[in-house]
Length: 221
Image (cartoon, rainbow, N blue to C red; front, side, top):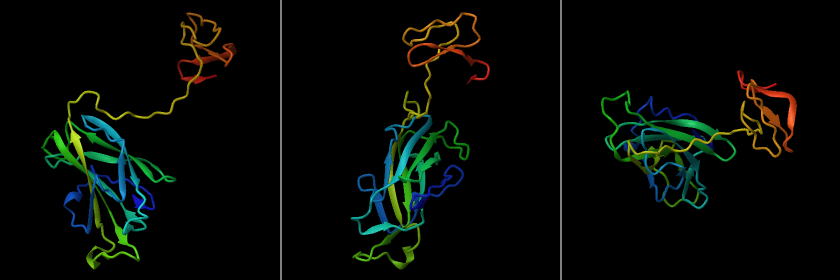
């Protein structure tokens, strides 16, 4: 991803970056992230896929700022140094929020090691630059490099029940009965038992004639 927000996939499952070992100029953590915010990540990660949001914080009052067009990478590791599969799902260009996921696999595929329970890390790196009034300018060797890192702790509990993050889905609701059942619309008329589809009702609870649900195709004629 880039700054201003123009996120792209980090492909951390295919590539091992070892971002937690990178030599950087500036370091943050979950109590003082400075430039990045993580939200929506479950407290404990079990087997399966978990979603979270990665966003950019306002650095107006800080001595440094993210460099324009800086790449932003993130990597997630277990306590035994196994890379967890992760990626960017969707980007909101207007508010700069990237919806991402991390997946705890029973078979990590690229290693013979199992993912161990315990505290792991979510590491994010980017490139920052000092401002004109900065009292501590960035040394030459770090200028233009991935010189900022922030680590967030994660907890892996592989067999914990119901630990998956919820998946938000957009759905459309219609006042339509199921074949052979009844509508809950006011003053509804039951659909015939042998009808090939349900009956559609308007907002007043009246059946709409000549419009039935096509159960084979999942569409409305």
